[in-house]
Length: 448
Image 1 (cartoon, rainbow, N blue to C red):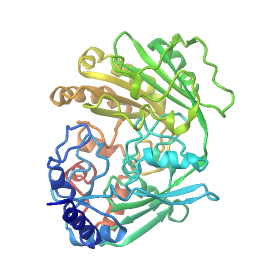
Image 2: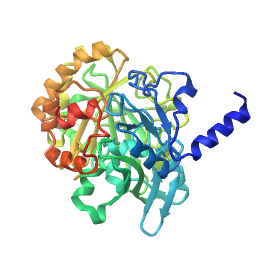
Image 3: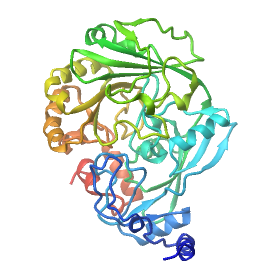
Image 4: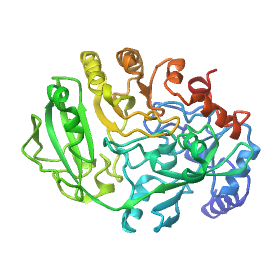
């Protein structure tokens, strides 16, 4: 096929209301997630270029899922039937400067949105450690950054547009839809096809990032609240060896008082003298600038730069949310498994997150501490470890991250969500026949 014919075919397919599977066979590869640990159950990937194409696709397919930036490490986004992609729908739809909101297409990533907002004088309240992820996917799974006063990324959502199972366009907002809206924001892909999202904004701000090394666990026991309150966003990294956090990352807003003073010592940790990667053996080249150099919020709140491969590349991830009041005890419970964990680990990260009212958020009505594991890509070994970690965290009613790996029994997962039955009823309202459900949702949410 020559270039002219190919371009005509592309134009033809994108113009048709019923779209054809172009992207999957064009790549010549099996569809996998970002880390490569999940090979999806179908290669039928259809690109949507408009709301009407999405509606037509939903109307004419019995089962489907939307596939975003593929950063989930489990099968929450998998389908045995057909995938819809909004990769080409990644624009800013409207910026309302007076209302301090922005409406975006579902396919936009934080890495594309954030510089635009900064140039217009605005910011989001927080970002995840990776800017490469899509806004829709992150909000649908309650992905988060850090900061004890910062809600997860879903808490910025003030409006959304989705296509239900019949192809109807549904508009929901925090202002007019109350509890229905709270149920829909962290929708796990179960309510419909998310096409547009409206986010709350604030004035843009600058951040300085400092890193300290070798914070003793003993300081955690005595000063956890002070450590977490010391900066706008705090991340503690450990490999569970030597009873210490190898690195403490403090992201400090320049406009906040009192200003953070980067003393040579921080609760027994020492100020780093060069940029560092959370994984000690890796170069800091792909990490955001440290050493107290001020920069825009979107260039400091993530750990990794948009233009580089994030984190370690080939890896697995697990994360558990526990109530803030149990945070120290939960961390120490995991630390007792350190000798078993360390050989299979790249790094762990501890963060804090504010409570919210979103039904399926792991932070629902609960200030939370998260214990995150970035594993070496050895699923058989990790799969053997996770039950021991989950057992250690069971007294604290830990909730697993929806987009990461866990082995917790489905009944136990469901028991952690007080609004689960309401969420199931809401999903049946928009998707009575289960068009948007897959095996993961059926098992872990719907209970069969």
